Amino acid sequence: MPASCVRLRCGLLLSPLLLALLFSFSLSQADPALPQPGMKTPGPQDLHYVLELATGDELPLFHVNFYFQGDADGASKLRLPSGWDTENQLYNAIRNLRATSPETKIYFYALGTALWVLPDWDRSRSVNVQLQWKNLPSDWMLCNSFGANEASQSFQTTLEGFRKGVFLAGDFRVHGLSIRGRPVQITTRGKWRFPDTEFHSLVQKVMEAERSFWNDDDFPRYLVVLFPTDDPPGTGHGEARTDALALYFSKDVADTSAMRILLAHEMFHAWNASRLRRLEDDNTLYWFSEGFTDHYAALLLWRAKIISHSEYIDRCNDVLRRYYTSRRRNHSYARIQAERGSDNEAERQIYVRGATLALRWDALIRSETGGKHSLDDVMRDLIRAARADSFSLSKDSIDKAARRYLKEGVRQDIDLYVELGETIPFSADLLGPEAQMSMIEVSTSFDPGFDLEASFARRIFTGVRENGPAHRAGLRNGQKWVAGGMADDPNVMAEITVEDSGMRRVVKYYPASDEKVRAPQYKLKAPPENKN
Image (tube, rainbow, N blue to C red):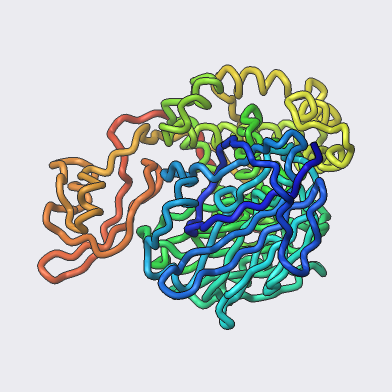
């Protein structure tokens, strides 16, 4: 039986959501459905979408026509959006059409993993995609991983590349840049406490530093999204997508300084792990794609003079504190992988374990080669090797690249310190000859000293424990929580603005338990005295 052109029509409630679930059903072999005027009949590699924004009271709803060539046996499998973060069963939104926020009437923002119904094809399969956006208001900006302000789009990508795209439209502000001769678009919306130009400048500096490090400008376009949230200041997260990255930060953040590391981290993922071709669902090298990316985020910011040498060392100290004080430090990689979905400390251990190992390998290479080489050379060699179709990122390929600079390679390090969870050794020269090491006592666990969840929900402090860290800093039950917050890390200082009897003040303290361990910390050496 010949394959038919399958047409699916559905309504989609728009949300910024992620991931996909395999959902199987049969499609009848009726007469082929024909695409819209101006669209060709889809071939075996084509995906055609027509997105029509509903009018009237149906906002914010898209009617979606999806065309692709069905399987010859009359049954085609589809992947439907499933869940992201705390959201689950997103495929129900295809049927349950209801607005969740009046604000969504003036914009939509979605990730491809939550937006598109896709055929069950190999994710690496090349596809030719057509998108048609209909009934968008004339003053809406339209932007996505594959272009901007094009009501009709045609492009070639992989199924995975399309699935991981970013798609937005509405009252976004779009700023275009040319960075090292390549187009970059920066989008945001809402009101920030800093000018847009401050973020534009940061993006330009970070991107120039990273593309210069790799000597790679092979990007047809790149999209950077800065999205405001209602979270307390100091909180933010991000993700790397297809030729794009997205940052989500509190709309009350004072400036862009808190965004620097995260921006550099997500941008670095364009190479590690995207161009190193680590599969998204292969977590055996998650320590490498996240920990080594964290390492280079701080290192390249310092080299680009976006942060100072002291700030870079402070960042490394933070990584070392988190690693050596973690209760998960000596857990096997298999165990922390199994627990990371329900345990923030297990997730964080993967990052700091990888970043600490990156510092160790860099120091070893510099020592063994007399300063002629560094971890940089290993990373660049891996990227060059990844250009071959036969390349696969693995523990063996990482070890092979490192053996050019380390006689013993790094495979034993991976087995001992990553897989088995033995403690990574440190050395006095870990951060280079300009840094001096000392051992200090640091707290081992997070303790805010009050009922964090209840206090934040009411914006009134409650459950303040007498003689706890918050109480010693001056927090009391009944005080108003005006601004500020804390990370769930005993080594990151909390800064909270409180109001008591009409007076406001800032309370600073470390939300840490009294239990201590010793960990290595570094500082810049004093400059030598000038005898003249």
